[in-house]
Length: 116
Image 1 (tube, one colour):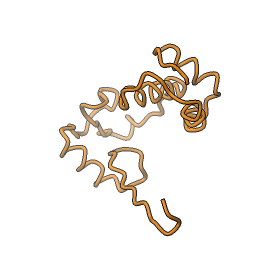
Image 2 (cartoon, one colour; image 1 turned 180 degrees about the vertical axis):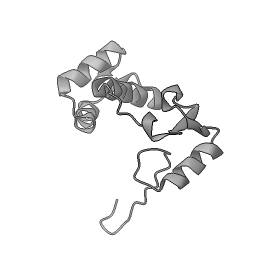
Image 3 (cartoon, rainbow, N blue to C red; image 1 turned 90 degrees about the horizontal axis):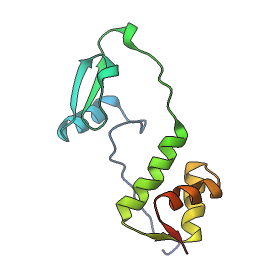
Image 4 (cartoon, helix red, strand yellow; image 1 turned 60 degrees about the vertical axis):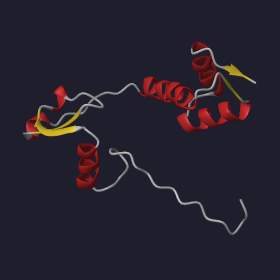
């Protein structure tokens, strides 16, 4: 791009983007996600969002970040339908996920993606 050109990026995800929660919940509803009050332990990703019906139901959840990072890499490969990536792609994925180059290479190897 030329130095004076501008790129405009619009984010459309419905969670965790720092946006007002009502807009995010409306977006979820418009896209077929059930939003209700109840026990958040019964929430199913991609199906519903369950807001705690009582403060006693608010709890911290441990999340395996490495599992999420590896899932992200696999989804990148699936979404772009590639079976090989460049060294630059590997470096990007390592930086984006905060995994080492070796860890990214291992994930790519596990899903049969070549590095060229």
